[in-house]
Amino acid sequence: MSRPESTGHASLFYNAKEARKYDSSSRMVGIQREITERAIELLRLPPGPREGGRPSFVLDVGCGSGLSGQVLEEHGHVWVGCDVSRDMLNMANERIERKREEALGGESSSSDDDDETDGDDMMQDSANQGRKHKPEPSPGDLMHHDMGTGLPFRPATFDACISISALQWLCYSNSKDQIPKRRLMRFFSSLYKVLRRGARAVLQFYPETSEHAILISECAAKVGFAGGIVVDYPNSTKAKKHYLVLSFERVYKAPQGLTGAEGALLNEARTGVHVADRDPKKSKRGGGKAPRKKKGTKTKEWILHKKETQRKRGKETRKDTKYTGRKRPMRF
Image 1 (cartoon, rainbow, N blue to C red):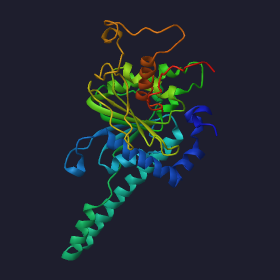
Image 2: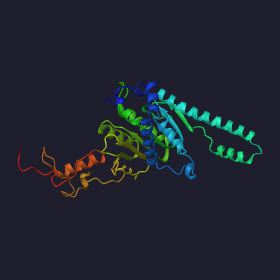
Image 3: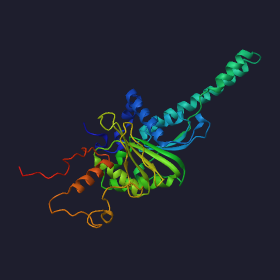
Image 4: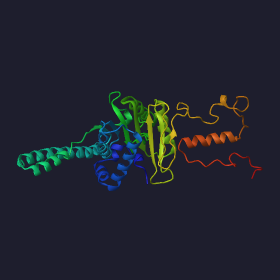
């Protein structure tokens, strides 16, 4: 089965029919809610209205039909969503308008109840209780925009950013002028500007290959972000999820996945993570020189370094044993 990203532009794939099916599927709604809850957990936002704090202003990139925005609302946060598909945005707008109408209808019904229950203490108490729990209008807003062209917001606008199942679309080219690396660099450089210092971003995505994950993480590191890729359930085919967790803190280290798999760091040198024999000048062998190898052969040190690099990039690598890098006694 081909991936949606390889069938064409996202605005063409998510047409009116697909958007309606996407929003009405209980399975998709459940998956989106679960991923968004996990993204909010990784954001580690300050206490919200539920804990007596203030709401955070969150950017939702690739908001789709507003399912992730609905979860943000439940946590008491204000959000702005952007998406390239107008049909998906129409679904999200319907949800926002429906909630606004419910809020206006609740206000009118509560005012009518107040007029009819003057003088009745019991009815007045029930009306006051209903007024406390009346529905509120949605604190979300929408914008039609392609994230590959950069984010059109003022600098230092948002407290955080999330993106659910959208970032992988930038790794595909649907025309000659769409170069994946350039589009990723535009997106991450603009994201770096629109976030406030101290903010974090959690971008969940589905890489088709490990090269896509490496390309995404490298582009994020080039613009100045620290962080890494968190992989939940790495040994599961269906439940495996990739989260790119970004921060402005130079010493920030990506948290562990749900099964204990550590996130692959974006820039090991900048975050102070030591990699064995990364710098030839710091090697203890050969009086400060890097260990030399024969032409056409690979030393044990080279193999161990290569495997460690693959692990930090999130790739599945075999464990090191006493047989790693050992020379065979004879040729077959």
